Image (cartoon, rainbow, N blue to C red):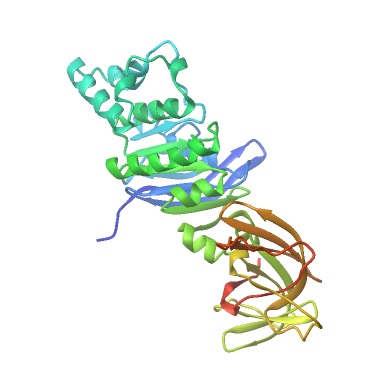
Length: 363
């Protein structure tokens, strides 16, 4: 059985005066998935989340949750809850009372509130922190309290607006693992907003990449990394090398692209390309094979460029090289060898790649 949709957006458009920040968004979100809205600042991702939550009305379009049109319902009448970037915890209440706040508004019996709050504090691994004040907590602990306060109300959809932005890198990675664990234990649908590609790829079942108020691409992290649909996606989601040139020939599902003095062969996978058309090729740094050149240079084969190592960046378990070629400076990434052998600045090398390692882009 296919998983049902829990949130459906149809033609959602949002304008602030003469400025349109969302353009005719169609999107379905499946029950129980983690879907991330990813993109640069100003792309419309937070506005879209606020529309789902009910904090912003649409200019046009409909918002459906569990098959019901909630487009004109206020936030408190939608089966969603939101965790904000700054957590919005009450400093005059301790941890227990912060988590219990929403249940008390619903006038739950005291015994039921205590049971629910204790269960939620256990879920976020803060069993012993109920009597702590908010100012006594670390950033990661405060973030967990905000999660507990949202989840204790059993929302159908949990909205998370850059909740890890204020945390340092090590705590962020730990909290991403915690979010995945909590999601697995609760089964709640998560909609997550971030501009951080690493957060998106680590956490998400699917990613919605947004650009200038539109959906640029939608897919799993693996699909979007391996098969970007545009230059914007290739550059935003991970490091990539971009080569640009005209198509010199097309045959048997392959396009031949003139790059500098050589030729690159790449599958065009049904893309409408024509001889003479300028296209771009995206090649991930780890897809390159690089070897040293010694003596006189031989003719450069297809899918290869000769160059000189311009920079070497040691990153612990891996090394990233910049290789200056006649057409572009390429990034090459490899796992550091056991004996620590690395290419040196100034070495002459040849970078090559398999045809299927390049992705042909027409936009």
